[in-house]
Image (tube, rainbow, N blue to C red):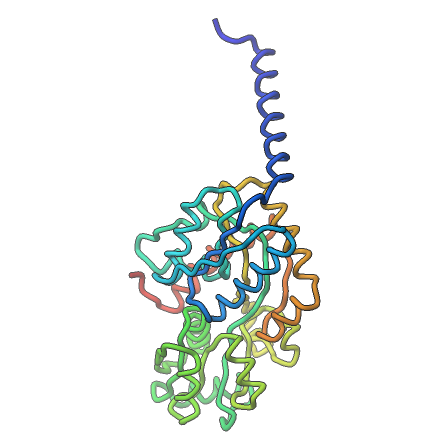
Length: 325
């Protein structure tokens, strides 16, 4: 005999209520043990510094120990796999930019992690942008000046890139203006700036940490930042959009990224932590010194943005002509 319809309804209602109670109980008890923050970059790197700063802030707020684990390799995919395969309980968190995580779907013919299905956003951290820069002695004062020079020089002009986001910014810019300038890849942004200072490069596309420090030192001139809006940390630096590239927005944003099956109740706790941490003056200063804005976006909205980033980066990587490995 089958269950009576009323009995089935009561059973399902009871199960839903029990699940809600379990979720609420987890939220009340989380966290009760050390939290592991995983980064795909080596100790001492900019990403490692950000990770350790946030880990310390969470430690003070959550009253539990935090551990930073550097899982370097495969363009961040080793760190991604570590988190995606971990237990979805909030105790293992990937610290990375959501944009770089989204772009990883297009680095390999067979991505080891389907980031849209296996990962989700726990909380946002900051927003930043890569930069188009020229040497302090360059005659180019604006993006329009640089664009005119690149078109005039054709394939006799060259430019420097290092990080994947910098490569994408430079290649999308070059594709939009239709200039056949030659790309030169470097191990670090600093290496490209040395070559640019010698006159060998017309421009470079670099990260905000190096860009802001070198600009403040008077060594380079920033012509445009990739964010859709000007950054509070760099109010005098124009965006690519202001430089004539309509709808241009390659905003990089840091986030706590966790396994997709992590309960909403745990996400709510993480989201609350970051809302508190990002409002602290020392946090705002920490990021501003690195050319970034402390940036809070509710986790639910951040997840929607993350899924859109995965779609956007498919086109960016195509325009940048970066082959899958």
